[in-house]
Image: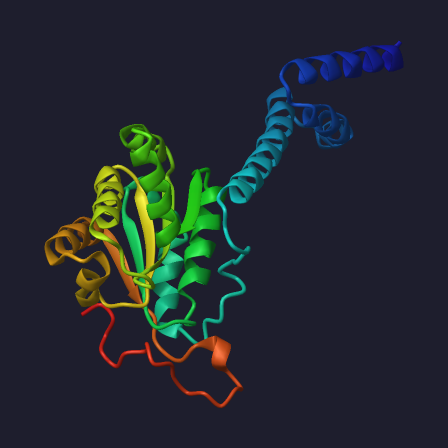
Length: 263
């Protein structure tokens, strides 16, 4: 009689889990039933344990989907970053990894010469954000401008900016590698303005803020943009030679500046 009742219960759990679109509940319920009986769990403890397994699995699955949808050029994590090359950034990045900056719609700016790990850290923080449940999009500054230009030409810019605000984090890589024409600079400014105090940005640049006027072709536009970006932001300055040049007998690149990039 007990075995028959158990079989019927399993069938019912399987049906209900399918109806809830949570098929993993069936496996967790069966696997944990003996453990619950042996340990003398209450019904509430058993139910909580089964649901906890489902939520954990669903969160992990959702995070993986968000990571794949973000458009990262490669998967980079904080664990595989070379902290020996950037020891001064470690504490600040560790604080950012808690994800608190996303809840407060704060920004992160990573400045420094090429090859010092800016894109790696931006990607790693983006993956952290995805695991915290936030939608993320990654693209270079040039690609973002292309996207906004296309939306503007189609008359869809306000709708596109509103859609992008639904992403908890947008990553803009390589600001300053190529200068923008005036129209493109204005579109980029609108992206920054639309997210100001609404959602977070991570930006990377090989130029100090003082060089952004040349990138955007207008000192006033650059100043207004920087003002909105850094008002609620952590600015990290990475230093040193490119890791790509290690062991090649090359100590520096022409673009590496002696001044502090944040100046």
